[in-house]
Amino acid sequence: MKNIDSSGHVTGRSVYLDDIPVQQGTLYALPYDAPSAHAHIKKLDLSKAAAVPGVVRILTHKDIPGENQIGGIIPDEPLFAEHEIHFWGMPVAEEAGEACDASHGRHAHDR
Image 1 (cartoon, rainbow, N blue to C red):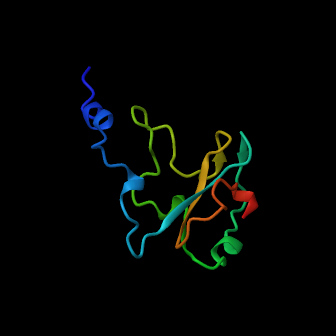
Image 2 (image 1 turned 120 degrees about the vertical axis):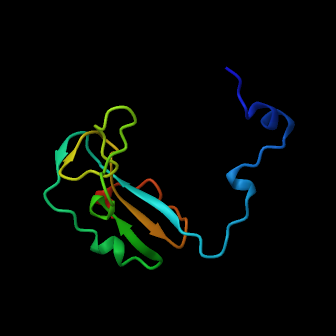
């Protein structure tokens, strides 16, 4: 199988994300992931996270138009957990904020 990107990579012509200047108004995404491998979501209170300066919006499964599915072959994997956590690190919500800071990689229960 031919790799269509290999020529650009080995010659230094490929443009990577870090090569592109950040545009004014860019928002950064911070996933809130599940801190356990299996759990039931009884309540999801994101009010403290939403109150952090610079947070523009927090998205959950309720914000997805259509199906909350990312299963490529079999539609068996939700993008955001709805009622159950299926694996450690499963996305529960996504924060859109004005700054990219050291809070990346936090679990949903930390915020």
